[in-house]
Length: 326
Image 1 (cartoon, rainbow, N blue to C red):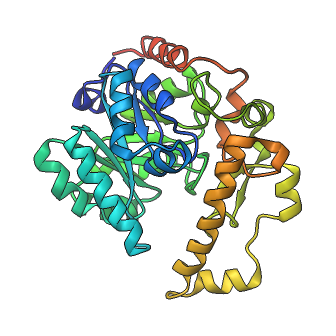
Image 2 (cartoon, one colour):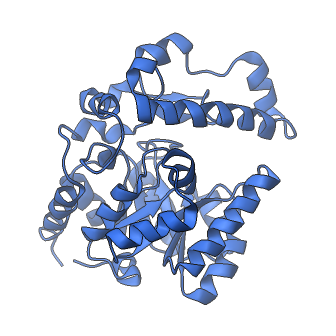
């Protein structure tokens, strides 16, 4: 069963392996694409956590599979140095003929203006109609609909409510958040989504290089164990409740909250949080819970009970699609 999304990218299954910092190692990205979905490269994860030169990392993935891959570009106006890196990642991706970009946290127009003439498809992460309309004004081809069940920066609307709010816009919609099973995948397609993005489910795979402690935390957790923390980026992020999270709390302190409310100071506070968290998340990924750190995950943990190869997960989702009437 094909959808507008899968036909546009030439993939067999309308399933995205979402970009995850720090969990998107090259072997995982390649495995998702090789199995018929499309794996998304997270540049900071590729370069900072897994220590690849960005171009060489892309070429390594291409040696593992010739199937389509994508690149995630976080385009929020933060530091000039970071935006210079994003521009460079974009240019290298175009030179390496990456066919799909997923943009987030900014106006995607400049990405579309560079990618469109090269025939590259661009989707943008959104959590509400307000941001969806801004993204469409920027010229994107489709929308990654981040709902209230997602890991990382979750939205505030349920998958159904978000679909009902965005479907009148007439663009392909991808359901992102809270899905970790073939049945959930098929349900989202029945609802009208053109594809589904898996994140947490792909951490609990053979190909992901996350520490066993991280994977075990996902297998043990239920929906009630997923909490929102303001202390990672200054914006609520979904994480697994651990003793460390309980001890440190999830609410920003009074000074941080004051800075986050200010138009001029919010970027400074978010930068402070992000710089702290980039190292903490990398350490959790590489070294495990013995260091009492932060495990990002979404509510799909309730559907994850074993570590499996990525190909098995995608094959099961493809089989579930066959049960949907044409």
